[in-house]
Length: 183
Image (cartoon, rainbow, N blue to C red; front, side, top):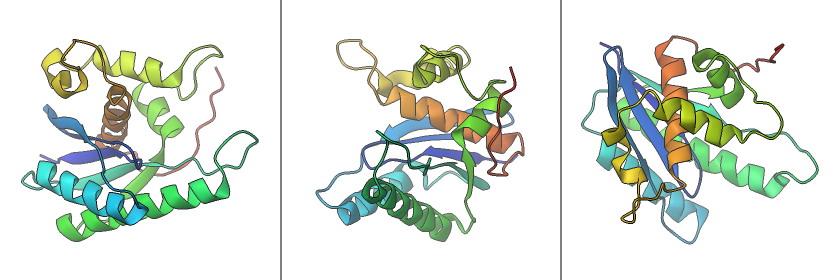
């Protein structure tokens, strides 16, 4: 049985899901801590390994960062920071598990798992992905994504994205290519 680790990486929250043919093995998030990018890289890596290090991982899949320059989107400095952070986390996981990570664009993973990569105008893609995953994942799996007051935490979106990435990897589609919707 092959365990696939799916990751949604960011400097504020790392969503992770491990799945296999029988379902979900682990599904949660970690919050990198620190004032510098290097402190966050170190913290994020250590937290991930502490949470998933005892599970046999056969494949590592990460959401490929969207690195397009568009007006009103991420600056070159922000994109550089994201790429360095993701690279450091993936390299650490490669060293720990002795597996070369693979990346896939979120739109490609969604197309493979949900059946559509993009959503109609006016719909929030993060919310739509969450609804899809929540309808297929047992409620008790989301325990860390619910606050003490019973409200959903924003980290649920990162966890849901990591599930989509893991499922795309489980389905054997690991080529990081963009899929354009025709519907």
